[in-house]
Each structure stands twice: as C-alpha cells, then as structure tokens.
Image (cartoon, rainbow, N blue to C red):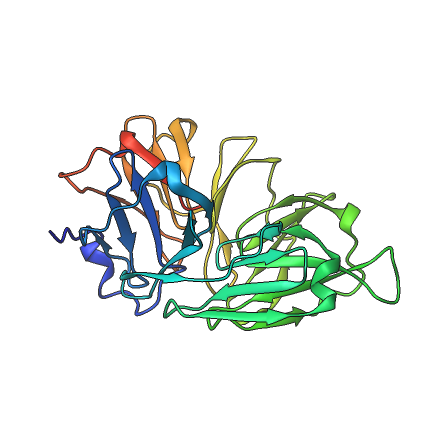
Length: 278
C-alpha cells in the first residue's frame, strides 16, 4: 500500500530538509521523501529491536542499518557497527574509535575515520563540535552536508560553554542568539530575532519559553511561520527531524522553506507512533 502525504508541496521544491521516517507500535514504518511526500511502502521494523536512531536512519539488532533516500525508499544493509557510540545526529553517527558514518540524500553510507573525531564534544542534528587543537578553550564546528561530506565551518572564537542548546540545524548561545546552519555548511548568527529559552526542539524547528514557534529553512533563514489553524503549540508532543505530532495524533510537517503544514494519513493513528526520528 502506498499513501501520499503533503501533495501540495510537490510544486514547491525538489528538495526538502531531510528524508525521514517514523515507526508505529505495530511495526509499520512511514517514510518521507525530500519533496515532502510520505509513504507506507509496506516496510516493518520491530520497535523493540531498534538500538540506534537518527533522522535519516536507524540501526536494528544484528548490525542491520536502515537508511531512507530522497524518494522515501527504505534500504536495509548489514554494516559492521562499532559498539561504543560517542554521538549521533540527523544524518550521521560517530563512535569512540573515531569512525564516522554519514548518510547522504540518496541513502548511501560513507564511513570515514579520523583521530580528530575522537575529540568530538557535543552533537547537533547536522553538526558536532570538536576541541580546537591550538586552544583548548575553543571548539571547531563540523557540519555534515546533504551529500554526506563533512566540512569544518567558519565560526571564529566559538566556545563550548557559550552554547546552551543544540538543535537540528541550529544552536543557541548564552546571549540568547540563535545560529542557523545552512545546507552549504554556512553558520549564520540570527541576532535580529528575539528568541526565548528553547523548550522543544525538532530538526528544523523549535518552540521557545514564550510559546512561539520558529523554523529554520535549508538556506539558514530563521522565521516565525504561519501555523495551521488546528495547531496548538502547547499541544506539541513528539518531535522528529522535519515533522511533529500533537497530543491528538495530528501530523505536521515543516518543509525546506520552513513552512508548516498539517497532513493526514487516514489509514494510520499517529498516537501509536513508537519510534520518532530524533
């Protein structure tokens, strides 16, 4: 069976923030593609067997890695998965030994190894920090781009203690300034926007302590988008990489431009969602 979601987004863009998935308590796995559609392709995954999850992937017992491509197709493959995880995000996971697994937009896995990765400190959705080799008070920011390549971003003078909240493609410093991370690995301080303390975090969206909803586009724009009429921000319950569920089981998706849409899949009750992609 194939169920479509977000049909109105088809004409908006060929690339959404991130392909993703959610797993229901009965094992039915819903996938989303980069154009904003959602599918039930008949995939099943036992929730109790998922031992690691991220925005574009999950790992099942026995070293089975499942990835989602830009068309919403799910692929399973055997991978030699190290035991000790150091950190993970939407499109990557990293292990103590310095092995980095990244997943690109096509669902392919890239594995690299670097001694520098062993010094990783904190982990966001599409980025992580590494202790600076020349100054122990500073950190370098590494961004995992949609093609699965890792690039060091230019953020001079960045300190770990300055960052108080790590999100999907954004973070907040101790002055309340939100920095957004674009798909091209540019990091942009959005000091023109007043934001309260971040209380709920998704991949490309968040809610602050004043109850305001913010989204971040793929190009790094921070905005307060128009919200669907049924959405009550204080009722947001579960947050994924580019979607969220409310207490009534309604599904909302945030597209690549940071716009929010309520979508329905009448065959599924999302109150039974067990595995969320963050």
